[in-house]
Image 1 (cartoon, rainbow, N blue to C red):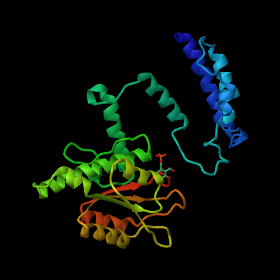
Image 2: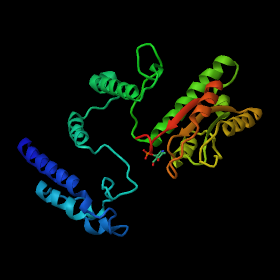
Image 3: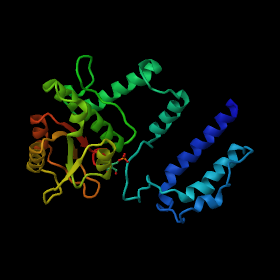
Image 4: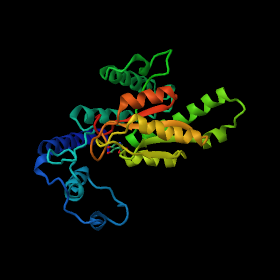
Length: 277
Ligand SMILES: Cc1ncc(COP(=O)(O)O)c(C=O)c1O
C-alpha cells in the first residue's frame, strides 16, 4: 500500500467509523451468532493473495460486525466507557504511526514525559495531595497500565518488594525469601475476580474478607484478620479496597481502611475500575 492508497483507505475508514458511531443505536446490542460462527465464514488458512482495501472494509461489515457486541450502544446497560471518543480515536492513529516502545526515557522522551505530565494533570483534577504527584524529590507519580487487573497485580508486586525492603531494614538478619513467604494480602469478598487472581499470580495469599450489610469492607474486619495473621507470625502487606464493586457498586470504607493501612505501613491499592471511570 502506498501513501496515496493509505490516505484513501484511512479516509474511507474514518467515514465508516463516523457512520458506525452515529448509528450504533440502530444495531442490535447483542450479536445473533452461535459460538464458532466466524470460523465458518473465514478461510481456514491465511489468504495467499492480498485483497483491495475496499473489499477488506466490506468484509468488516459482512463478517465481523455481525459478531460484535456493541459496548458503546446507548442500549447496552452494562455500559463500560473506553477510549473511543473522537479525539481518542484520532490520538490512537497518531500514536500507532509513531509506534514507539516506551522502554525507557531515551526510547522516546516525549512518550515518558507526556505520561508523567498527564498523570499529574489527572491527579490534580482529582484533588490528590501533592505526595501523589510526580515531582523530582518525591515518591509520588502515576503510570498508565493496560487494564485494572494489571494495576492490581503490579501494585501487589510493588507492595511485596517494598515490604521486603522495610522488613530487611528492621531485621537485617532475616532472609528475603522467608519474608516473602510470610506476606499476606486482604480484600473484600465482593472485589473483582482479578484481585484474587493477582494474589495467585503474585504468590501472596489473598484473604477475601466479609462485608457489612451494604457490601462494604469495614476497618474492624480488616484489623481482626490482620491481627489473626500476625499472631501466626505472618506479615500483612497489601490491601485492595474497591470503590464501586462490579456486582453491586458498593464502596469499601476508605476512612477506616486508610487509617489502618497507615498505622501498619501497608500498601493500599484502590480499585475504582468500574465506578471511578
Ligand atoms: C471493580 C473492577 N475491578 C477490576 C475490573 C477488571 O478490569 P480490567 O478488565 O480493566 O482488568 C473490573 C471489570 O469490570 C471491575 O469492575
